[in-house]
Image 1 (tube, rainbow, N blue to C red):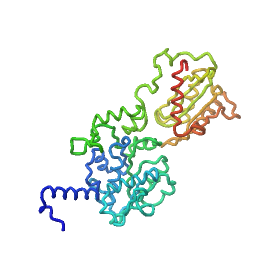
Image 2: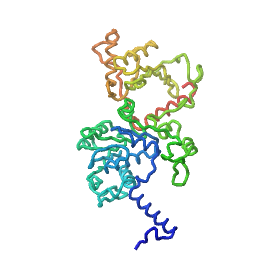
Image 3: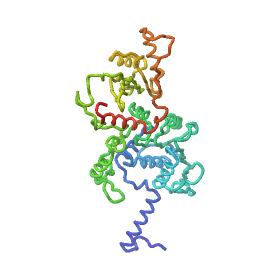
Image 4: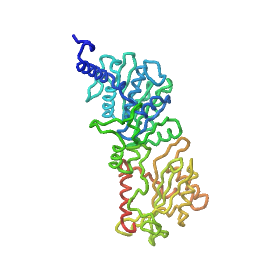
Length: 435
């Protein structure tokens, strides 16, 4: 028979109460978690499409999302009016390996007393059962899915809440968003914008369609609501200004904006290339073209907003042991440009050097761009350039445009890591005299 706490000596009573608190924490970890300010702001946001965007392994992004899903399934959200239970929820991960990690984290945070008693977790395989599915006593269920499933596999069912680390394919994202349209469903997104194309999400956030909760890595990020001291790691070290400064020292400058601060894109402050000499008349800036025949190359990147559509004209000198690259001109049209507006700017850029399209040796472009208002492709630009040249009497209407604008993102070295290959090449050019 267990003695009542009041009948025990003080030390024994403290041990019993500590054990009881530990048991409660193990049964419902999320309830006893002291929230961080950005987590609380995310929970209090009533938006149906909201994003928590921070650096990697910073600030409990996934934790905030999982706790909110658990609240909504129980019908106990402390900050918002939510759907009447029972509901169906999905937790979507980029891979099954990642899904198992998320399932373990969910088990640590959820209210286990609210789940049906048969719920079991295998820390190697995830929740036991088909799919798998977590079922609550009130009838709510959670299904764990992966973004690697075909979009059609996600195109059925009505879902009240989805937690997702955004998929690389916008098609999958749109299928997930469509699942909750008929029931005013909620889509919760948590992410660090790296290791995948997230331009479509950035556009949605900038247009105000997604409620974007973005937070840089600062000491205040780690101070729980109502407290004055920051959290500590497993070694007892505080997440303070000194910790953040050390993280910044250990992180590549170009990547810190994303991996530490959760920004949309990797960037560098100041010169990207340490070897570049920015002084006019110095090693890299000159008023004169080299007295040799250059191989004329044109590069295109498609988009519709300011600085998203870009064209660059380059001349390459192959006469030496290594190719020397001369960046000659660039064209950056204004916002919402169309292929009809882009083509004349490209031809004007060639005209600055007395060249026409027939003087171009190689032209490379981007994959087809599909924006909110405009679609662009290499073929669209070609069509407009050819139309202008025919109108000006500079091209035979019976002939196709030559050279064609080929896709730079196909073939060898076109996949992951290709930008680094190009950057390394340019850096080596700068380090060689006259290149």
